[in-house]
Length: 302
Image (cartoon, rainbow, N blue to C red; front, side):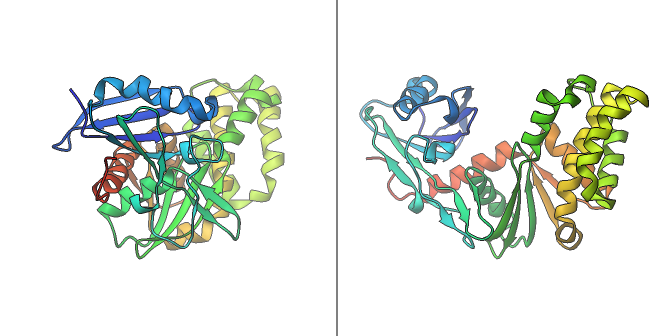
């Protein structure tokens, strides 16, 4: 069983591939923990072959369309950023990677940069392309939750501006390394405490630093349980993020790209403030964006 082409989402921590046959059917979906952050440039090709070697055809180069951090300066080969405002990148913007294995024909899609205020994305632009394929006239906000959550403005099929929030990374640091870790549940989260914290930050976002220590104090002397503490910490951080985009979410339609717990948590936060948001599966959208890039490539084998 060999692939007609292979779609790749290569992040900082994980590598995911979809092998697609000639009819457009996914014949294999695999992943590994060999993300960009663990690899030197010469280790990318072997990591890819670990997941795909049995899917490659002898005697021809199989197209491999890659998005994500493999195209960063520290990745396999740098794919220079496009600059906003711009449509999502196409295969014509991709960087062709020289490989030792002639069965691989690798193209890495670029990320997008914003000059003022300075911001960057890699990988999310391919999800955006997939989203726009289904709703090309969308004018509004996309929320892409993650370790570094993106809020992206779309208009006329173009990315006009975006903002990145380190909310997920802050939560990981505070819950795992700060004094707050002593009072937090490791998994379960009280959603009532979460919603209240979101509302508190909507009213007084400037109190964030004080409210964070309040999580610790309430656990010591006011009976705040571990699940409530986790919910409050998450709500404070996501709440202050939503306070920063308050005007935009009040006036524009919102779509969230993601179907995991974090994406549903963002939707809960928005709903608690009176906003509605559609929720789309991120994996499906990513594959759609990579498929668009492949389908627009007039010559995919070398």
